[in-house]
Length: 586
Image (cartoon, rainbow, N blue to C red; front, side, top):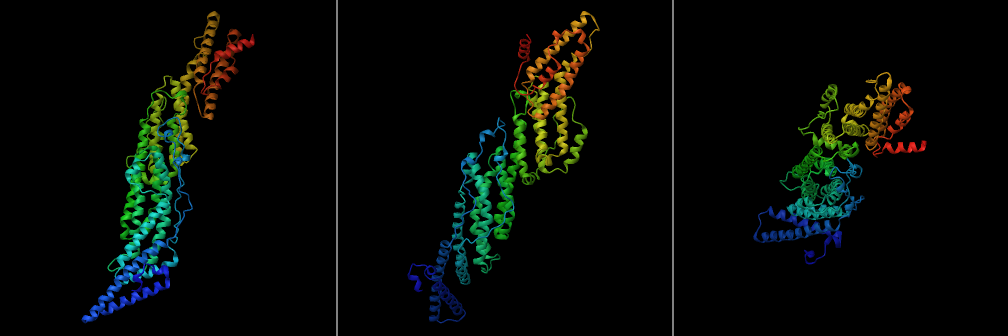
């Protein structure tokens, strides 16, 4: 009782005095137990009351010492990773919220969310005071003051874990606060959260549980069925882990914007990766509410991933254009979608987990029509045979590809020129096939899917050639030409003039058309050149004796060179070339 008059902390002044103090309190406790077992006289009852008064005062004292020791012996831990993140970390949302001029660039979106990181246990409290903390806890439990001891521990450690979150730059935000945030600001907070969550669970919580076991490992309150260490751990950490989960839940109920999906997947991956850790940390009944809430939030975020992807499918399907795409090149929508799903392949495991319970998946039925003929039935049979073995993500991706193709087919109808319509479809189907073939998408959509698109864009290429060149090649046929006479020569001149006029019109329009893929551009040029130049040479060669040279406007080599000017996206005219040529000759 000599310590009761002063304000000094016993263990701060002299740890040895603290041990003597505990020994004296324990002796008082044992005396009280002995007295309570006897039939006491009036004076002896007064003695018992005095002893119990000493015990009550000493319990309040050591509870205060216990709390003080926990608070003032905390060891600060500075995380090695930097969590500072400015709003510059966010994306330029304006460039991706619509299928506009800028392509989706997934390379700046994917955060490194390492999976399967090891648990790291550290000393959150100076290990030198752990024996004293344990001695105090044991004595309080032996004196039936275990509940007070636990409350002191939980209160101190709640504050300590709050400090941890503050150091990790995790703000206390309500769900409403999160939902009101602009995406750029929210994006940087998600990045910070994904890193902090893993560190908090695998370092702080693991270390917190270790601390609880060190102090309360042998303590037990009757008739508690669970270890005291487990109860203290669950209660001290509950508020912090629920604060982190509240942020994830807010993300799950936010708007399902396609440009947000990668960040939502980052949140899902962290939660999914940490679910086994949470199950281990909160393995007993007292931690069941945290396990349940964690699983609930994981499910909610998974549902958000699924809903966001489906909204993306709908956005692709309903994307409309008021005018045709200039030059017939690769449409912004095609580039955006293909780059988007290419980036999503990095989340294959998570997407498959999110999609596996979704029953409204439409497989790739290829309802979009190909030019002149429908896709071969054997290709559809191959898809149907393989669909049962495809992953959930593959089925969704195939569905999205069909939606995209249907949309492109509708966009192609905006072209008045039939040939340009086929060229547009050829370009975009080829782009899709090449993007899949040269990326991880190949393993998801499969080689059969690629072969089918290769066949499709080749059909569009042939349809383009027919629409452009069939009429002009008919002018070089022998049909309708008599074998001699002035009428024969007149028809020859008219045929040649009509051929040159048609060729010049094609040159003027199709130099402004575009085939972005250089290999495909060369293939189409060569294919046309073989057909057109050979037909022109044969026609001029057969009738060379009946055609004056002055009517031969272009040589075969000239035409071949001009064909090589096509599809560069910059319209030119042959009239200026011809006038310049005449000037040079004169």
